[in-house]
Amino acid sequence: SAAANAGAPSFQRPAHAPNGVYMYGGVGTGKTFIMDLFFDAVPIEAKRRVHFNQFMLDVHARLHRLRGSREDGVEPIIVVVRELMEEGWLLCFDEFQVTDIADAMIMKRLFSLLLAHGAVLVATSNRPPRDLYLNGIQRDLFLPFIDMVEDTTVVHSLEESTTDYRLVKSFDAADGAYFLNGYDDAAKNAAAREQYETLFSEITKGGDVVKATLRTQGRTVNVGRAVLGCRTARFSFQELCGTASGAADFMIIAKSFYTIFLEDVPQLTLKDINVVRRLIVLIDTLYEYNVKVVVLAAAEPPLLFQANKTGAKGEEDAPANHGDLLDDGKYVTNVHDEVFAFDRTVSRLMEMQSKAYLSAARPLVGTDFLQQEIKHLEMEEEPLSDDEIRAVWDAYDVDETGTLDRHEFHALMEDLQEIKAGHRNFPIEATDVIFEELDQDKNGTLEWDEFRAAGRRFHQLSSTYWHAPTSLAETGAFGF
Image (tube, rainbow, N blue to C red; front, side):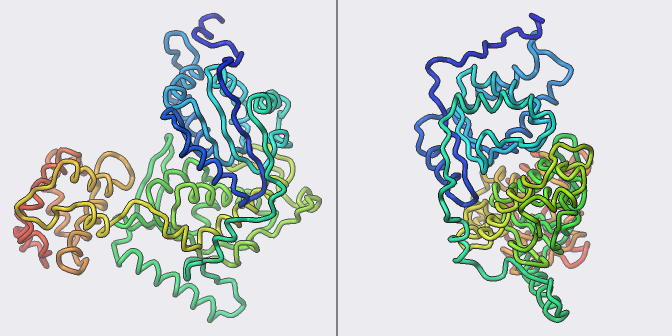
């Protein structure tokens, strides 16, 4: 209807819009490196660099927000396109791939509108455009999108490159980030687990292990073991890849935690193809966010997935719904995509053990953050600025709810105690007393105004605040 299409541009591309670039090739050939060089060098502000999975999750979230409404009679997807174009007309997509039918069915419409508005696409992929969504259900509806990509980008192949530069980087491997417990020797397995546990204790500095709840796109992600002050979480392989988890779940975990401990990773076969698929998405997401990953696994990365790369055996052994992350449908009919994608997973897992990856910059956490970023923490005469207090707030709001819960606040108290007293023995009872005092509206969380008022008084408490009480009777020493 006319109303439905109000404000919709024609699908003819503006004459002034330059062509983009679509680079494809095997894992580790430098596609992302080249694109990032371009993105950093191009002298415009209206640009966005994003993993393609994350981009489509963002699009679906925006469409969900607009569901059932029409802004001035304009259909939601046009509103979304306008929003995206306001944020940047140069779109750089890493790991351009399509395995989700929900993505495939909207991409022609979405990108027709983006291109009609003058968007320019730069993308990296493991596959040429003609192989996107290969063997996907209702692929005929997707083919016009492929034509569009080929018409509006320069397609460049890096397939002749035989060097995996991630593996070159992994030769400078760090010690002790990937532990094997798949030996026939029980003593070796026990030793590997002990090393894994020791590293967890060292990284978390003995901090309290608590449960945390993250929320994304209407879903709840439960984290059974987290040390909030150092932004570290611990999962079994079953918790992350053996349940109906997807890219949105992995993304909120990657955004909330800077170090992930992943244990009991088994060797996988074609019969585990749904689990393999989740592992591929998990590692892609953690890599994209530069999350440090410590793994306890039954085999080295190249041996984790035992697949027949000819595909013949795979078509017999893989379950019918093997391409479906949520086990509620099927849209891929053979295992070629998974085998191809897992090569990337192996490459990334190996690079993630390198010193270069592990030393890459991430926001400081815990005591390192407090000591380096909050310059006036130990100066009695000078209060913290609102910007410094906000930095502390953001650092300890792990679940990004805009409030601090009791666990998050206790993590801050432990870190402050370590800075001043040299140990983290800060009784939870003391945290409870302080928390109750600060929680003026008694709703069980600290809002920004409540926390800011306390932050301004840090300097007043420096002579007494840091001596943690050994009993509730001593909590008055905190000055609250």
